[in-house]
Image (tube, rainbow, N blue to C red; front, side, top):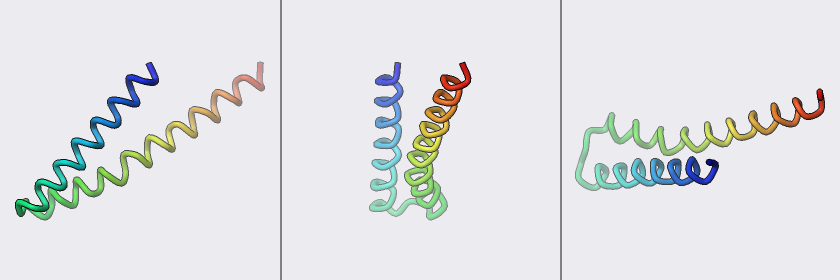
Length: 65
């Protein structure tokens, strides 16, 4: 299951990055380019934070039992 979500995340980030590159070179709207740039930065950071929180919660539950 982890492998599926990892591949899904990689594909989503790659699609957003590819869209960012295409829109940048073709002269897309500035708002769309900034939104895609925001997504390229924020999505991996949020996934990393989620992984850290999940790891902390799982370790805390193991210590409580």
